[in-house]
Length: 130
Image 1 (cartoon, rainbow, N blue to C red):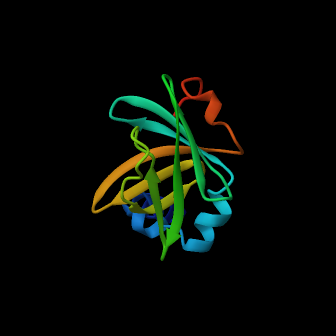
Image 2 (image 1 turned 135 degrees about the vertical axis):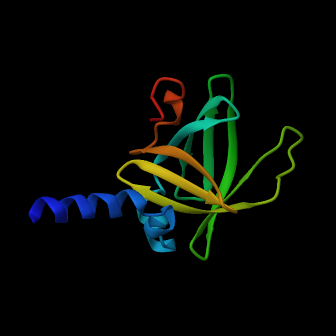
């Protein structure tokens, strides 16, 4: 009977949606701010440090860049400086976190990243995002 119960729990756990683990505003602030997000976007590796002052310090293998973050409701909102110095519009996403695995949910589009402790954006390209 215990084996059957364990199997049922395992099935339920694998069927859970990212929304079941979405962070609240306080959890986003406590768990993500002051740490580095690493992942791949458009085929390019990136690392972004979310500074407590609301700045994002990012790096790809080819360049450094900056942006801004804020929390609106239970969403993490991000904006980045363009090359011409103008800031693009804010993109707000729900964030789920299990261990160091980040799941971004933006209008039913899901993407993944990894959370590294502290300021590690200068390691872009040296750390696996998986």
